[in-house]
Length: 138
Image 1 (cartoon, one colour):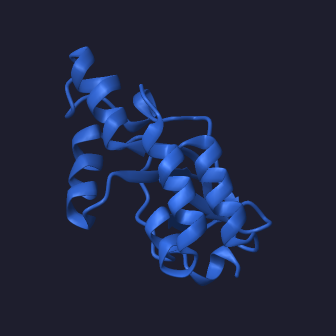
Image 2 (image 1 turned 30 degrees about the vertical axis):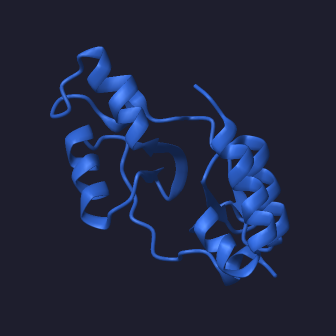
């Protein structure tokens, strides 16, 4: 089965110019811990609640004055919508992440896939990926 069959299609995007306070409010509104960051119709980064906490708040940066571009991850890991659930689980396991942005072959963001999405259709692969992600220590 392809990733496109289980991914979440409606994805809220942050702008690199958004303040961290605004991004955190968006995360709270949609009850998530990660936001893709887009500029000029292109995915340019990913922002996690951990980025906000560790790269900003812990460093004494004011959330109402610090911008998403200052703390987002620029090294974007993603998967294509036509790849298999097994590919997604393997990538999440190797990268030790719980979510991946999903792109079409034109490299446009079309969704996001989580371990939870995989677990619904491919429990074995998702369980293996979760085990590897959970063993990761920072």
